[in-house]
Structures are given as structure tokens and as C-alpha cells.
Length: 153
Image (cartoon, rainbow, N blue to C red; front, side):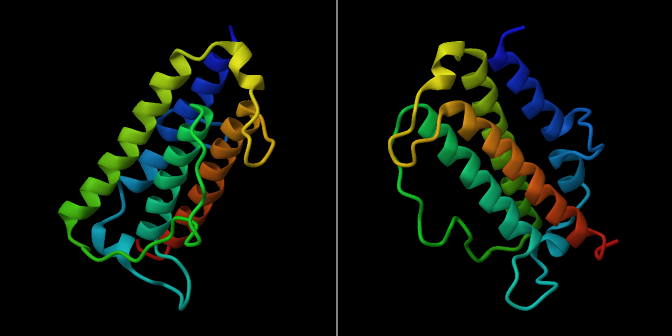
């Protein structure tokens, strides 16, 4: 099996498969209501919804980077307040996460292994490091989401 396929499996498992940590992004988020996702449980901290949007935007940003686009990270670090807290808006957020997953799957399915060694000019990291970094980023924020959601049930 080629390395891009191994990485694809890591993405799939963490998203909605059987990762070693035994929880998934989709499996966790599908059980959270819009109300619970929008709730600010701690002052000056992010809500589940804000974390989810941050996660999605970073996934798409890193994908653009490994596709060769040079991107400046925003000062907000992709954290933005939630203005529409309706169930419909939360469903759209989950759809956006699904979109980011499909985009990554498509990219990884067509990625030649030699492209993993390409270096991103803004920070000197390889595509391999960026890709594994975004998986680690997803797992990190999934942990935050799980902790915040424990107070919602």
C-alpha cells in the first residue's frame, strides 16, 4: 500500500471509521444539538461550534497549501463567533465538515507519493508534515469537543 492510501485511511478512521482512540469526528458531532454546539460553557473560551468551524477552515487551508497555493493564516486563527445558532445552520456546519472530508479523500486518492516531499514555501514543512499535522489537529480538537459535550448530556 502506498503512503497516500495509508494517510487516507487515517483521515477516514478519524472522521467516521474505527480509529484507535475509539471516537470519531462525525460520530461525536452528529449527537450534539445546535443549542449545545453554540453554548459557551466557559467565559472567553470557544464553543463546540466555533471549534468545529475552526477545524473545517484549517482542513481546507492545509488542503490548499498541499495543492500548492500560498496562504496567509488569518489573525483570528479561523475562530469566528457564531451568528446563526439555528439547527439548520448547525446542519450546514456538519455538511461543511463532510465537504472537507470528501475534498481530502479526492486529493489523497490522486496524490503521487513523491508529492509528499514537496516543501511549502511559507514555513518549510513538507506536504507529509502538513497532512499528518492536520490529522493531529483534528484529533486535538475532537478531544476538546468531547470534553465540552460531556456537559451537554
